[in-house]
Image (cartoon, rainbow, N blue to C red; front, top):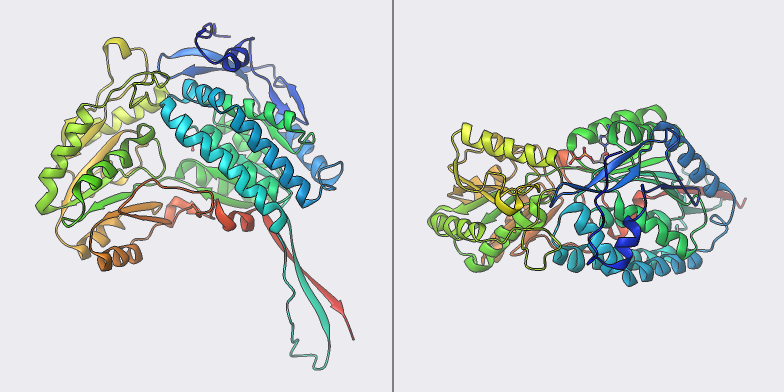
Length: 507
Ligand code: ADP
């Protein structure tokens, strides 16, 4: 086992306590346990590359055990006997616990993922608490319908026909590393509100906040086996979960490539699948837009969370007459951003999550240069005091053609391609010119054009004169190869329930 660095004593006492000890165990059937193989893997702080902890490395045997625990909890014991109101109370209790531990969880998230403490504290944590409360409200409002049936081939017959909405069953949730706690909660809240049980597999880069959440679930009194959390790697633990014959549904957020693996793996028992995958989202600025607001929006659209957002506005299109002005403003801002460890309150941009991710981002920057795009800033690993961490400078490219790799492929890092355009018609076609369709931003003061663009762009979310706004009530998901199914809002209830029709003979 790689040596673990002693936790910084200025951290929150809860974080120090959580990080003390040799290795984090995972949660199966209400108990903390090591992997059956005895293996554990190192967990890094991307700002320093130091090992801050180890986590038990689950594989097929542990997933089998976790799925069996989730199945038992679904079918016997206290969970299926709980009323919807009790499930609602439990979710509220979890929300209260997450809220009262928000400072600690935010620090742990920043330490493990690298994002700034401001983003963890003001973004991820309040959203996680809100999701829990939003779906706590839904728990008591999930119901079927009575349907007047006619039965044309049996005239004169009478039936009472109704539907119920029942849990899907055991749900496997495989989540990424860019919003680790938030993604865990975004799945857990509707899954539990609907009465399911689950096995959560956090990303191998960022297992810590999910494991800490597990402790809070126990404190809240969640019955054993309802939520099992198995840390481990994608090709082993993740693949075992997505192929498991006793898992009824898999919900996945991650790359489009792995999304395809998940779909293939689901075929064995035809489990339900919902996928929230990659994006290469256009952020489009018309010349009549409020340019100051647009400049802020395109900056934040790409560089929030170091560009590690599936919804990153990584293709910026500016109407030609304002192109130079906006490009200069964006580049200037990118050059003056304060980079550093996320825990430093002065930091505006932290490191990317891992060495592998940093190398991937730098490879894309190199490919942009090779293909003839003009690098205006960034594109390199930072040196000096930050040389040990995985820091990449905010990277801006101009002279980009739509067919270049940096304009087609998801980079998932702080790299933006800025391109001019000449007309709204041309722009709609170019906006739709990738295999993705997750989100798009449109900046204009022309209302008619805003609506027209919203209609023409093939994406699951359109932001008009704003960017990166999300809410527990707003459905989230993609068109095309950005995935299928919608998380959040009432649509999530459909994802995690199934409908039963019941006929009662009244003849
Ligand atoms: P990224 O490339 O950004 O790391 P991935 O799509 O690889 O994103 O990872 C997202 C999640 O999917 C992680 O929890 C990871 O462990 C998991 N994963 C990766 N490969 C597989 C796989 N073959 N089957 C199931 N899950 C996987």
